[in-house]
Length: 152
Image 1 (cartoon, rainbow, N blue to C red):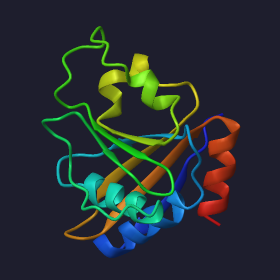
Image 2 (cartoon, rainbow, N blue to C red):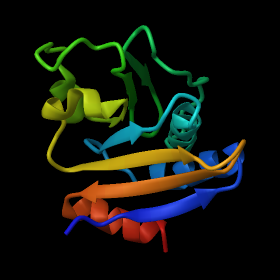
Image 3 (cartoon, one colour):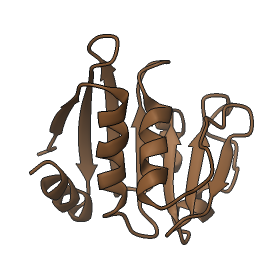
Image 4 (cartoon, rainbow, N blue to C red):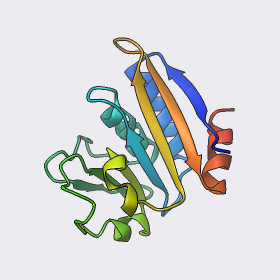
């Protein structure tokens, strides 16, 4: 049975801090699928992940470059696959998924077939101007345990 963990953020700062706390528990090879409408807070969430990984650079969405890399405690591979045309295109995503860093993929459903089996899917829903519902859907024992720890 698929488990879901939910958390409500009252502000962008709370979202950043939640993602930062999550990032502190991430390991090399962890893959996060980030879903949400435009303006839902995917980039704010990724900024929080970067903060928790000790990334010093400013993080923004890699809309036109597809992949941006940031160095911290672990490398952060930030992907925006919104403009990737079709699942047949091989951009070497698996090298990142199996790499030495943490990968976060915005619009991950567009490359569903290329994603690893064990993954943490994070959906962000707008509940108002700054309020967000964050739904974590873990696939794999590691991510289930991670969600239990972060949402306790």
